[in-house]
Image (cartoon, rainbow, N blue to C red; front, side, top):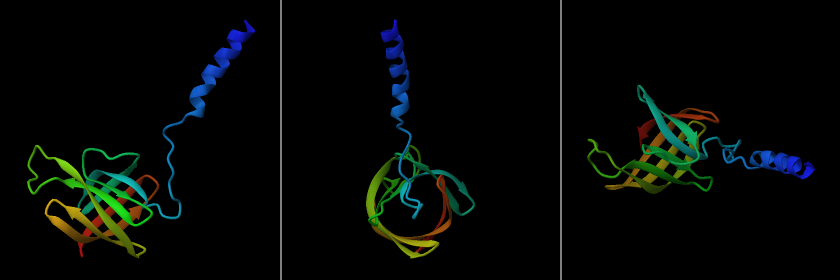
Length: 130
């Protein structure tokens, strides 16, 4: 009886030691991570932090200055829309502006992202020309 009780306790505690929902957030640079487009607000795009890309516009900002941008796979944006992942680089211009250079279906594009706000869960940006 004691063995069964002990086994039940061990098995019930096992899931607590394996929390898959935790992932590291760089407190010194909240921009680092994966961001999925949640919605538009006038000229601003609002992204939510995630572990993986969703099937929409997304960014993955890496600490080494590289990025992956998920955007349209071609020039046509009429449904059915398909997306591709493109490699690029990003760099900080100042505390609210970053420079992006990334491949896309037509070559390479340069632009700036004005960071309106960034928190642990949310990124709000406005895209500006280079």
